[in-house]
Image 1: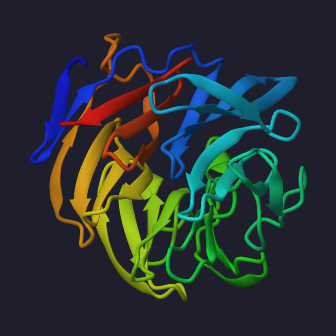
Image 2: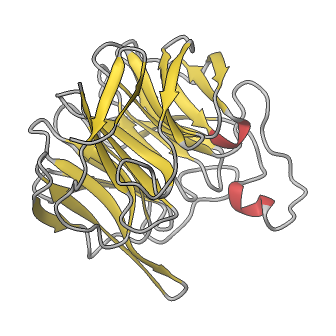
Amino acid sequence: MGKRLGAGNYQYEAVEGWPGIPIPGVASDAATDSNDRVYIATRTSQSFDDTSGAILVFDRDGKFLKSFGEDKLVTPHHITISAEDEVYHTDAADHTVRKYSTNGELLQVLGTPGQSGAPGGGPFFMPTCAFRAPTSGDIFVSDGYRQNRIHRFTHEGELVISWGKGDLSYADENRGSKAKHGKGPGEFHCPHGIVVDNDNKVYVMDRTNDRIQVFDELGEYLSEWSIPSPNAAVIDSENIMHSASGGQVYQSTLDGKNIGSWGEKGDQAWQFTGGAHGIWIDSHGDVYVAQVGAQNAINKYARV
């Protein structure tokens, strides 16, 4: 074990040297299945004329087991795994959500590969995250980079409802667009991550607005709280939210009370070498933080 970090009762020791081999590219996100195997969404190449990715699988000790998705993935973004061991992967540049088995078998595709939805409307136009609700089994998707929308699907893939507002997308802002992005309740400016609790409350990481918004399952706005640049979040067994936000890991109650934060950027083995982008917690309470902006940037922290 290595450096100890944490906030309050959430204390961790960095597991230095995890995983056992270098990640061949950028680790966009990580998630674990019921056996604590770790699935890392990896951007293996993101050059102008070559965009590709894969999902790499490790055991909890960091031993490489297998990979899959190389024939499909373009720009891996977030990855989540349901209690039923369904692997949901969101591919931003391919405009799709794919569901895999833990063996790597493709089970379902939401969206049309390589084809974007109409701006300001239907799914998907550079989606960011998909999450299966633990109670209803429905699939919630943040359509974040070009749509500023949230979509809810049945488990079978039928679109139930979409909500959100905000026309200035993450990409258009850099091109001098005069369109308006969303700032008010129920509006978004790059909804970057999404998670649903056991009471069917939907938490959206509204990144550029520096907040997490909370909705019911029908898209009705309930509340929000401020947090710097939230990218992704996971809710632990104690109903505490852990979010990769503002380059750190924040702990919050589900009503937005801040417990504390930890983590920093640097070149030490226990530090983040990239920007904290994806986060997951396994059955032991250990935390995995995936970072973009740097190669081979994935850290494991064991709870102590």
